Image (cartoon, rainbow, N blue to C red; front, side, top):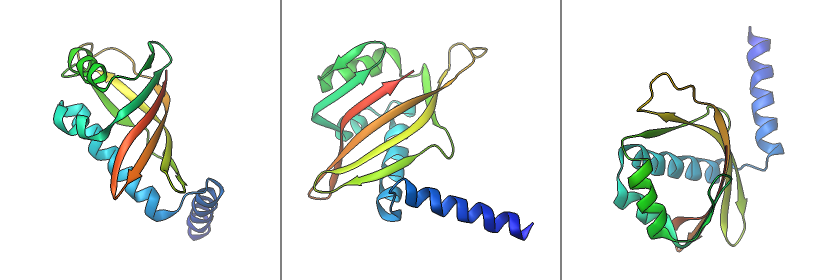
Length: 146
């Protein structure tokens, strides 16, 4: 059992190094992801607005490109609030620093349809580009793939 735990820990640390993750930036972005998607899941529109950059670019593989923060929030109110919740797939999160800019977050998540309880949710991939400016992190670009 001890050998298994040591092997598991070595695998974890080597995968973290291979993906270029440093602990501080990983923890920062993981925390931001948690706060943002808690706001998403609870329809806290003000918090979501604060996270999105004024120059947001949201690329969605079904609906295309949106560059309007106002439209993204309006669509969230119309199609998401009370209807959909997002769950991050455990172990899928990867974070890499982008010196002089911020960080890129990659991972998988599942969107649960709260109105159709028997609907089977499937994981989908996402990329979020986080921009840091004077200690404030904003979501600058999103790529959402289903």
